[in-house]
Image (cartoon, rainbow, N blue to C red):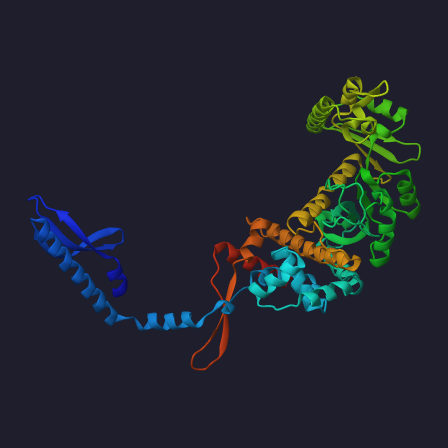
Length: 521
């Protein structure tokens, strides 16, 4: 311990002795213990003690002055180095070390636009508006960008880069899945805008986010097993999602050597036109079924079964497709809970007296409403009770030769695409969208799609390496990985050094280094 540090730990103390006199001492605190350095003297009166206290202060000052003679040469050098640094000397390099490595190893470094790289990595590290992104890049990365230049770049990004971006993402997914793209998953979500006006792309429509008054667009996403990205497309906000599947598959098939995989999608895409078109185009499919909308003969067969947990029944339909119905006790409990909750909400609304004829429709639990006379709205409790027979049942339509269990297992993998949308909306903050121009909206989605591909790769390698780090934690760790730049005083050479990382940061860095080399082979 240096002399200066010892002085800083010294202080004066008054101590009452057994005789009743008071001693004035200089005390040193070191390693949690107190040591008497020097006793100044002992006084029996207040005046004597005050004099000793004054002498003690003089002694402390003398020791402090003496310590300045022993200034460490190393301390002086370190202080000079520190004084030479400013804010520009230290920058955040974590996002580049982690996301930049993955960006390159996936193959996005083939995109010859440095600005695209900056926007994607910024979307992963600090998902902000484009203006805030420019501020972030300057403040933390030392990268100076003109916001107008960014907007000009966005105007041309989609037309020039989208095809290449999707090809790179597809090639990566194919490599990760070892060529196994025999099953793909398709779903759609809505992305809303803060602006209130519509145009040819942004339309008000049914919103899965509950933002029915906001203009929106539909985003269609196709992924492989595990949620790894294949491709995407954007649709007008007022389109019926069932009308998007066939056109989307045609575009994707034309872009990639995808063949005719089994297409898995939820009940929102179930329509007779879609089924007919899929069959005609030679696609095999697994779609969520709406068993309550089946023919009376099919519904009677379902209702005549004695259902138990895990039971599956396969029914052949007139068009030779198969309807597989499965029962789950867990789902039955959930269905019952949701119906009761919906009923309580309706009862509450009825009490307000605000429900009208327009509320009588098949949307959600409004199907339990009925009109009495010309004006009175009531709840059809009989219909509510009769629906209980469907609790716990889930249907699947398929034209494949897969077993019932394989059909259900593959359909259950749809949660990966639901997770993909959740990641995009929360972690990557793809919504709300503040852009107004069509080409900038498309550019925003393209950047988010690329970021999602990298995000999924990070998730994959963390799982592969049995890391305890969550995705969220890994992103946070990148925020305070720093590099310092300094100039040597004599040679005037400028050097950079990565500052020491904590244990979790070092683990993340090691995992990225190891797996980025593997991917690039």
